[in-house]
Amino acid sequence: MALRRARAGAYGLEMSDTKAPPKEDSPRGLGPTAWFELWFESLSPNARGVALVSTGSLMLVIMAAVAKFLGSRLPAFELLLFRSGVGFLFLLPLFRKDLLEPFRTKRPGMHLLRGMLGSAGNFCFFWTITHMLLADSMALQFSRPLWTIPLALMFLSEVVGTRRIVISVIGFAGVWMYARPFTEGFDPNAIVGAAGGLFAALVIVSIKRLSATEPTRVIMFYYAFWNLVFVSIPAYFVWVTPNLSEWPLLILVGFLGIAGQGLITRGVHYGDTTALAPLDYTRIVYAAAIGFFMFGEVPGLWSFAGMSLIVASSIYLVLSEKRKKKAA
Image 1 (cartoon, helix red, strand yellow):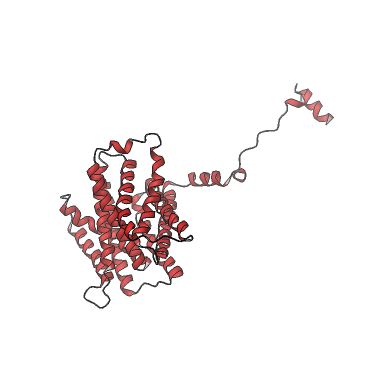
Image 2: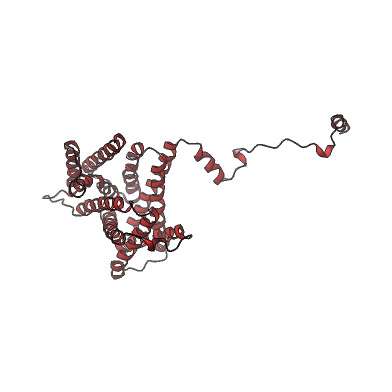
């Protein structure tokens, strides 16, 4: 100790003035949230997109599995009511600084139309979840890109190449394999699933029109609001009071739906859409695995054939559209 004092005095310092060098922050000293943020920021943009899209896709499939489990006793309209209601509550904090912003919209009629289309599409999706194999309902949901070709021809007056028309027809052949019309295995639920893809494609067209004048949060607000309104009416007439174990699962359906969709949207913002678009189709793989282990579901040959045509055609159309926009 005396030697340390002597050395300090030789440099004109008092012992009280000598301080240990500051310690550098290390990952070991960080909390779980800070450590995750540090790790996430260290990733490349595409890696962040992959992480978010993969997680969001898994959350949406888990939501569908929970809805399917509940659908054995509760009607589809009631499931959709909770999906819409919980999502609407999560959107309200976006307007805490300006509560009247949604009421200053310039396109109330278009918001109403989009809400009607979205409600119809969501009902089709929840109907197929509760009446078909989980993987099959997911595959039919991805028929949305197939409808963009006839919609572009009818409503947008776009020039569509022969190749894209042929690919779209091949994709619809996959839907036909699911439905198997004119056979003993005819399944009309596949038609409902394909109709859901049509409504989803129409929603995208309406969003393009709305985004020209409306902020994204206002579009989301009216989408959730009108979904809640349109679903509440039929849900009232088919209402089945949930038991104590079903209430938390219904809330979970709403939370997973809004959270999963939010993660996918954010992931596309981070990464390259061309690389991330096919990744969203992992929902079918997740659905097949969860359907097998949770419900003992095994898709048949017709399902695999239809699934392959729909997925391959949809991915081709999505990627070709992105390349077209990039070239333009």
